Image 1 (tube, rainbow, N blue to C red):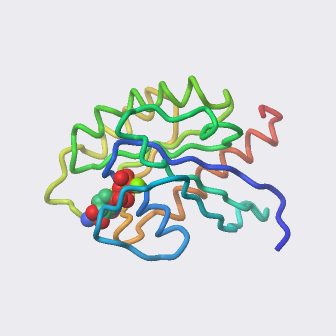
Image 2 (tube, rainbow, N blue to C red):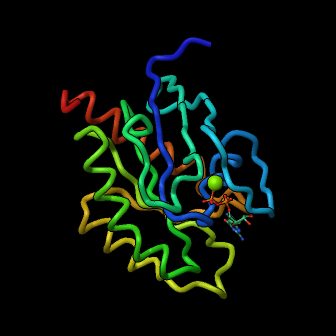
Amino acid sequence: MSYDFLFKYIIIGDSGVGKSCLLLQLLDKRFRQKHEVTIGVEFGAKPIEVDDLNIKLQVWDTAGQEAFKSITRTYYRSAAGALIVYDVTKRESFNSVQTWIEEAKQNGNQTMSMILVGNKTDLESMREVTTEEGKQLAKQQNILFIETSAKTGDHIDDTFIISAKEIIQKLKNKQI
Ligand code: GDP
Ligand code: MG
């Protein structure tokens, strides 16, 4: 299929927050209960339509290096967008967000669109981070915000649509 734009995306955030599950939901509408450490580079492609444009998403999942909080420059290279993921039931993963954003700013393109993603909203009774806190942090960092469930598939497509819209807008304004 032909497309108007190809956007490379990267998914970052602490281990266990649901990055691989987010990718699996986006590509296959599936969920897996087990936490399997991603080894090597894992990525997938998916076409979406945004603002009458055919966009091909090429999404890269961290290759298990997130435990060391250092992901190579190659991973960030030419990424148009980044998902910074935390687990709404794990305060610690939210506390790490700042570090991930800094790393992304250091290694990514200046124009890279970032969206803060609070995942696992299906576990409402175990929630440790409120929606308001997520919103505030995103606002403070001047990045987009959304909450998702990689289990139910809630807002997974929306995450990429919202972010792709921002990238398209930047392209139209010649900011990229
Ligand atoms: P990663 O290390 O960030 O890639 O995390 P994974 O995608 O491997 O997920 C870690 C664990 O969290 C696995 O046991 C998943 O089944 C679980 N998980 C991921 N996303 C969700 C979610 O939205 N809801 C629930 N309940 N569990 C999730
Ligand atoms: Mg993973």
